[in-house]
Length: 361
Image (spheres, rainbow, N blue to C red):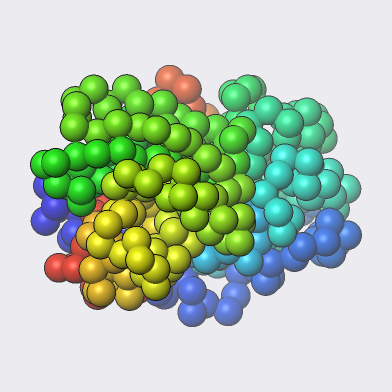
């Protein structure tokens, strides 16, 4: 399986490199709702043309707002690189707008701004699965198409499709497997350092971790804490875990911010070699920790693929496609929606000392 995943991820990583270098297709991240730009009305003249990577009958001239949980974060910057590539292919204008803190209240301001600015679509990673729903429904009632990526909302009627990297079950199970392998057969106490307590994707992954733990009787989950995708707070939470649980053997952090913060602290502390870290991280951020042995293995997927498919899903919906029956066509491939309107990109990629130097995102 790993060899297949590696081949696929090398190709995806190549796309991430290309898109990150592209200068067209969207603006840099905006952190003020009023700075979102001033595109014309959502129904503005969008002609039909050929999208280079899609179905060939996607409207051109669309204006699409990409709203991550928070801006200035490498994971979401990589996702936006994929979004910009898609926008370039379909001749759309693509702006990433969003808050500097990952909260639903902060995102709501940018959703409302996107409505006022007249965007055709919103592609959003929900920081809060519930609190952003009223604003998204208001956007829909204004004629704006909504697609979620990375993190969904609890009310499926508030979006047309969700682009998820893989199944929550696989993500949860893989992370338990990785920490078990890192700690070794002796097992011991483990803890989870997550992002926000109300992040739907994180909570789903944690649910499946807990369901899978009985298959690893040598592991004992002693705590779950939340760093809110903030580097300083995540570091503080990691330190507090190790101080509160002196027999702790491992930390699972299903967030790129949390795993990097934990690894950086452990790397220069007395806990190095004693407390293992795994979870979901970016190879570019984790490479040094893997190469020096602080982290044995972790995983992720190509975030640019999420942004890329999110743009195509929104554009094809606006152009009249029935996504439930036709799926999302992008990059020469068609992705079918499941019964919940979810597009699954593929299984996670494992990164370790043997392969991490091959990835650039």
